[in-house]
Length: 214
Image (cartoon, rainbow, N blue to C red):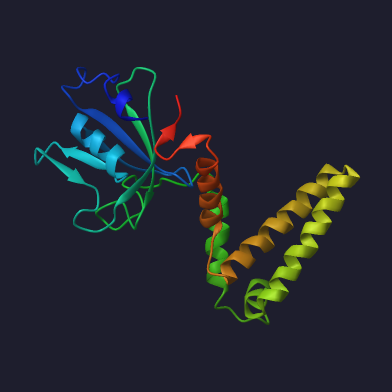
């Protein structure tokens, strides 16, 4: 969405306010719901930080203006009736005032099991390497972890060449697991990788920083 598309929205239906659903740009989790007027939406597009209109305080407010937990804009799209907006953003800390990632209890990422697996890997980091395979990998050197990823990558490629789908599924799972361990050892996680893919997509000219080209 750009400034010229703001005028195409149905501002009359909600007495000048439109609901804005905020979604995590990397993992798909719904973070919050707020309302915007024309000025708040224009400021959001201009500054790339999400702004709202507070119905209780009757004023504009920038998310995170007090807490510092701003929402950096990635994209905004209108629904088919042009009276509701979906915003993809990157949160700088918890979105909810309770200190929770989302204002919706139980909101989960698009692939919640991967996040559970990352949390399990992080928890096993402090375990006894003698009793935990993950702890043993994390206690080793980056080269040792990289070697495991290389081995699993080769086995995945061989399974693909063989045409054995069951073998490919199993080897790909092993590869992904060891890649998550490798990332953990380097202080990164899957969201960092997804974010890099998103940045490349926006940088290659197929998508503007604040939304798809018309």
